[in-house]
Image (tube, rainbow, N blue to C red):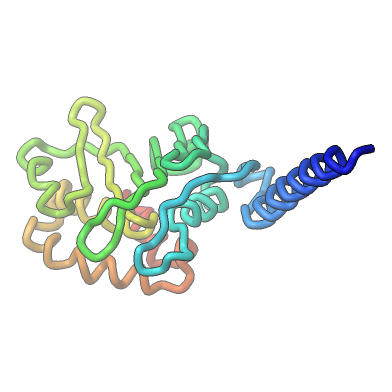
Length: 207
């Protein structure tokens, strides 16, 4: 065997070993529970990072958390700028009808949005026109009667949905919603138990 062939074989073997190690490390990072939470395998090439912490890939980290919470997405585009989508059929154990995490960072006040969730909700036209006053990332489809909210975690999304439903049901005025939005977001995001907190479950149960 010539030296050149030996070098080529060495490079090929090293590349294969590196890919194998990368795959193993990825699977160790991803929460997996095939019985109730779903399963997801494969490398991601998402690159969007928190501008305040260059080592934190927020969309990717959020994907791992949601896999652990609601199961594997219905489909995943693993490439840079890709997305993970949960369709209605894979959200039957939740109150949601669609969820999507995109490898992007959309500036929104003091944070960045990349995670959108849809939920069925009937909102009167005179109230749906005020949704962008409550949140620039809230939208309503009057034909499907679906409310969507985009943010950076499910806790913030659910709190915003809760306030919009309170407004839609006539329990809160628009002024009261605007007054309580920020403090309620701060409160839910200070809960150390996150999605397992009693406070989050209280908001979610009302939807």
